Image 1 (cartoon, rainbow, N blue to C red):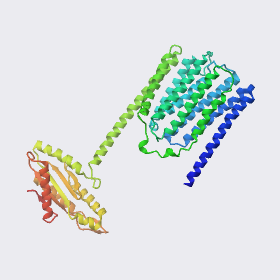
Image 2: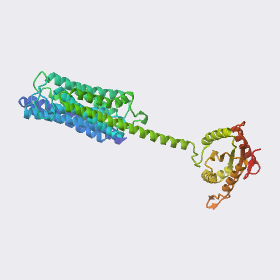
Image 3: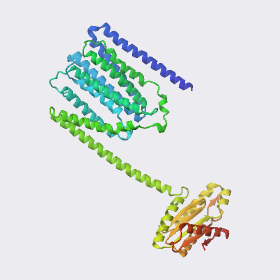
Image 4: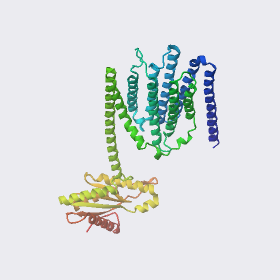
Amino acid sequence: MAREKDEVRTNRGTIRAIAICSGLFISAHAAGLFLFPAHAEAVTYPFLVLAPLIASCCCYGRGMRRDHRDSLSWFLFSLGLFLWTLAMSFSAWEDLARHTPFSVAFASDFVYFLYGIPLLLAISLPADVEQLPLFVWLDGVQAVFTATLIYVFLFNAIPFFPQPMQPLSIPRVVWTYDAENLLLAGVATLRLIEQRKYVRERPFYQVVCGFLLVYGTTAAVYNHVSAVTEGHALDPLVDVPFLLLALATLLDTTAETTVREEELGRGRLGRLIDDASPFFYTLALSTLGALVLRQHFYIGLSAIAVAIIVYGIRTISLQGRLLSTQHALTLASARLEALSLQDALTGVANRRCFDQRYVAEWNKAVRGKHPISLLLIDIDYFKRLNDTYGHPEGDRCLIAVAAVMQSVLVRSGDLLARYGGEEFVVLLPDTDSSGALRVATGLQKAVRSLSLQRDGSASPHVTISIGVATAPDPHGSSSDALLRLSDGALYKAKQNGRNRIEGAD
């Protein structure tokens, strides 16, 4: 308890220190712009680059503390923030070195578009991502192609290719970024809504949803104001969502580890997103490929081909996975069925197996007018053995008797089953009374030959009593009647002194 309190104090102290540092960071940014207005671009860009880089490192560190299923989401989130940092670095280079106008598409615009791809992948990861790593890569390929085609379609420029830059409508650029932020925030909100109260992934969606909502709001305000005014007075506003994200990733998450097993999983909405995301990726990529086909034929054709190939790989993989799962389920079902028909102690058939086989063999005997016989077997003085030597010794006796009796039954159609306690039953299809008597005699001799060691010395021989009943022509009689006759014969064998065979009248 004292250790937990110390950890809570340490976490609170760390969070308080980070909150103070974040406030100082924003204050220093604003003060630098106020004190050095003539060098505003040189002052502001280090802060604009450093804030998302801090958030990216915090997300990566959070991913290192989680299990594999959660870690991938945090790593993708960290990658998206790193791309945002890279895009801001490109913007700094364009503004400080190349003096590129805001209305010209350049490398930073494309990287800003790519920033949303890892975030979208992290939000739409399937529940069983650890079993489907190939699908994550396929979705990533489609998402990157989709972002590239959106860039080509809106800006009519191919990223990282030397070509004359086209002037762009500033409102068009601003609304495009707003649409991207709105899409990401909307999908994250849907994910957060569909999560159950204590599901393991919920803390991730809480952090992501909060960040995207704050980021989308501040970005919309910043972009729309900057589009009509000059200056960098609002630049410190850009730091806010990234520093809040860094703070959120360091919050104590001890409660996350107490998740009950039945509370894990996705709801209906989550499964819908899991199932629909690949389809929309493919649909978006093929549609955009068709849209840019006229202006950029080979790029559009390549996009359509990638969409078809990825969809084909996914379909083939899912089909193979389905067939493999069905085969595994069939084998597991067969194993479970076999276990359900087997006595756990002796390894021979159990009462349930005997009941099923007895009905089937009886009906077959009725149709074919073949004789059928039953042997009901009881180990003599078994209760005395249990009371004297204990139940473990009794179990050893049951196992040995079952094994030796099973070795006597040479026909594949004959069935030895444990009927209950120390009682066994032998089903002999197509066997008359003389044949049943021969089998009973063989069983009795085999069991009598057993000599079990108890307390380091040989014990008296084990003996059994057997009741034999035969239905020469089952037609017109019932299986229950034959079972009662064999039970009566066994009772007679025990009444007449045990270690004997009695036939039914």
